[in-house]
Length: 122
Image (cartoon, rainbow, N blue to C red):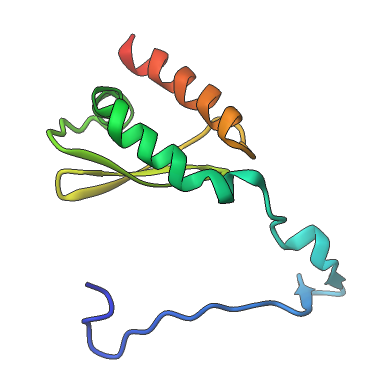
């Protein structure tokens, strides 16, 4: 949809150096290791987590939509998951759900998703 719009493009920027300018002498270089997100296991496990959620947890994802976004969805599909949360297509909407704490692997994601499910189901 975005790419079909007039004069719209997506770019990937790879930083090689970062200079922070806060004004009035608050200027310094930022260490790339502190800035750049390091690879974490969930990146490689994402497809498996998504497949599992879409195959086995449709009702749970509906509960997420109802409780956390006050949206009644008939059709739900997990689209992606990352260290900060996950995205669900709920009918025609895309909803973002944030984790309380960052996760780095499928097991931590599972724990976070189960906690959210318990809250959502009451």
